[in-house]
Length: 322
Image (cartoon, helix red, strand yellow):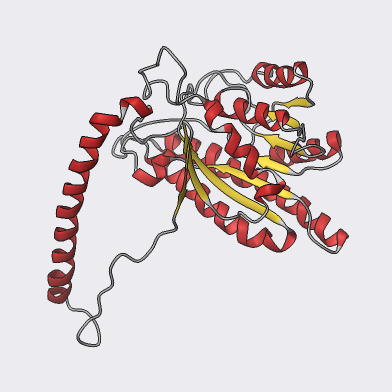
């Protein structure tokens, strides 16, 4: 069987458990040599003693299946350790071709109760962590492209969330970080296009320790929210077949992939004079949003009716963090 990632090497962060583990296993199954990165803290809020155990276990599982993998336990939110992670992949496998950013923590709180530390820690791990690894991988690919006088093979797959799309009320830090990941991804895609490198982001919905208190109804049969349903999309985006796909955001779960359209102008208003007055804006915008609210209320009623009838059969769940 042809392996689309044969001869390629990859980094997967947060790969000791959950989604990252499933993604690392999938990349290895498709032929890639994998650096399994995980800081190894037991708490989903980033607390507890760091451990090499989770990364080592995933790497050992890959090797037991006949693949190639090494463990790395650095903290990607630390700039220097992220640099060492990228360098370790190059040293171990001779090059780096694929970067999958997945590491993250949760510190959920309503915005009016959130502490500065709860905000900073989530932004640091998710958004800064994505930036740190991307920065050093991008520099590596740029130098390779300059030396080769052409393009190189490079793939970045970042992890955003539907919490960014829907505005999860109790996750202002997480939603903001995941929105930032999308901005980082599209900027990176533009910056690295001339070097042949692609960058895309996914919004996965899966049952992991990050979502164990959200997706509580565990089915007795096959789980439509198993992380293994997300992993094939990551493998595809990392493969040569996806070479023309970049700067995209895709929602994925349970056998479904949706390509998210970039924001579009929904309505446009022009002043009848040189600039708007308060009264003119009140007349135009108040009426517009009132009409929009009526339409959305009707649409929501229709959707809820469909969800009651079909939702359970398709394993649907509320929009939330991964």
